[in-house]
Length: 343
Ligand SMILES: *Cc1c(COP(=O)(O)O)cnc(C)c1O
Ligand code: SF4
Image (tube, rainbow, N blue to C red; front, side, top):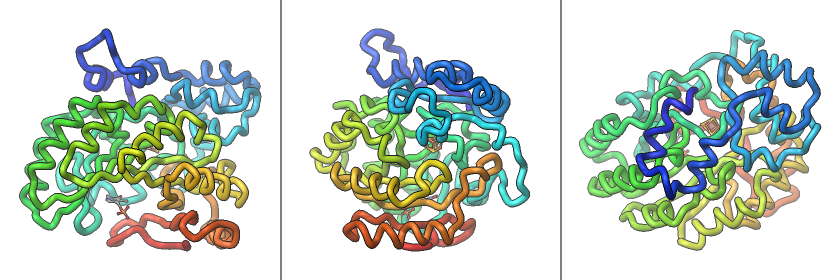
């Protein structure tokens, strides 16, 4: 994924007065050596990171880096973004398209797997590259936001009155600037059978300044009911700035949910998951899903057994209020909803 090639589209023409989050994307770390140097990591870690970065480039905003421990190659936030030799191991049951996205494609960039809901790949760009991501092999990860594809998608959605909800996903839709997103949402709001607009984004977690006044304005200003689903996997991701930013959305009446991925060495123990869920509900964010890892090539070292995951959910149930326990789900290609494993 080459974020540089898509920069002009979301940076826009204004050079002065550019929002802080765009600066942050521009200044993100893209080099494994620089990442390792910034954290004082041992040379073996640097060698492994450099050797494996080719498949899917490094991309880490500096705000996210500040939450990691220096000198600790096993830091749970670092593990999510640092390439390792383990990514190069090939496993026959881990593939490039584990969730059947290619066959769910209605149009380029528009997917439908479930009733009532369509997913628009608003852009291929992300503000962080997560090593476990099932989109790491996707051809559209190269594609900058293409407003012509949006127009075709809007026409298709308008022609199908069974569709109630549009999910803006990606990539990360919030790498696109607010004026463009506001335009898209205005077009969607004219489709009378649409009721809800959902955003799937990790941006407020990695660059909390992304929750701008303009963002709140277009999300609140639409007739469509907004729902924001963020993605945090570890309690250390939820620093005070992130909590304040999410709180601004919630104060404006926008429901915020979290989805996490169960990841070996990141959050596969009950204490970490319990702290994550508690910190979320204390911030008024509802834990929505805990995803079983999609079996994407290069991510096998992150996998946790389903049985172990079910055990963890059982332990969470004993500790936490019912509303703080996420649904543990897996995505099966061809299924008509996410498949519940526990919760
Ligand atoms: C996960 C997903 C959704 C949303 O599913 P919910 O269970 O409603 O959160 C919608 N479309 C696609 C293609 C998805 O992968
Ligand atoms: S998990 Fe989300 S933010 Fe991370 S690389 Fe994948 S799509 Fe981008």
